[in-house]
Length: 234
Length: 234
Image (cartoon, rainbow over all chains, first blue to last red):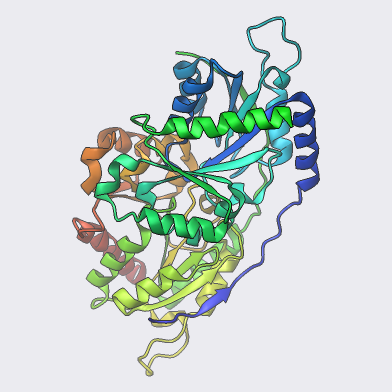
């Protein structure tokens, strides 16, 4: 095997927002709200996966979605139209990720549900899903205050992604492998992918799905429902 | 159509590295070196496209590659093994993009070619390709000092990406659409994609290819060769 020169060009410095994230998580715990931070590369199918998942869960728990994007609002509109749940768009103004403060601003902006007997804002929901900016690098660096991080890796991206984006796979306890329907057309090795994911995070759960057809999305929805109930009852 | 609430959560502040980038570009111009900044989302096929392109060009011009990655070295090794051209890996230490200073550090680290009659470092090459970190957000914000920016969008990512990552498409004069072989399996509208790309950058050139089979990579290689010759002769 050839060897190549490696140059360490810069150690990065990231703002420490851990305290704000911990405080936000504590507040959500008191209110019984489960916040999921969903991450992925662009075009991996976050929005389609969310629509399918929400439609499986919306009669069981109260759900809202915060769609983070640089400046479009196509995802929030799509989610609202396809599921009927409360959905807001967070514009990051060019920022490539969300931190805990930005997440808190989003939560404060969530409208009360149509049920007027409920008071407050985000405490009207059992589950709030934050769809982070499509990016495998920066969002992994910042704790948003979510209870758990989940990510979607799609088959066309390749099974080597855990090798190239180590932190993203380290911080996610749930890895959804999407676009399983196109497996025959790509050199994607699911076994190797599983191995690489568990190199990064031995306790990560991996669920292969096809969001387009809905195949196996129930497995992800069931995991999420269990998570919410454990969070509310612990 | 449903409308949704939009919250502007933060205006970002990016370090202005334009002056350093201009200086670097001036230096490269004096040396007759063309630097291409190649960007894309994770898994779009940058490395495979580069290998095919380099193999078409390496007998005509002197080429080197700088592979930026967070911490793996798989791409630099792959490029060197498959093409024989000089290839180094730049580790960004967690950073999600390269700026002009980091690019200059990479250029300074490029080894002389095996031709010992050539002196200096990067001035041994006609073309240096910087494969940026796989990310559609942050790399677009920072001028690396490259002569041109090019990007790869792969079919599985979807034709709506210019709507969602506006800056990336604005700063790229060349958009390569990769993985054309899997068009039948995805809802990808090439006409709409072209329209959205030109909304962002009216002068962008769009070249559909399949890097895996090599189909139409020649069109991209020819564009690049013309670019290098114009840069050296203007």
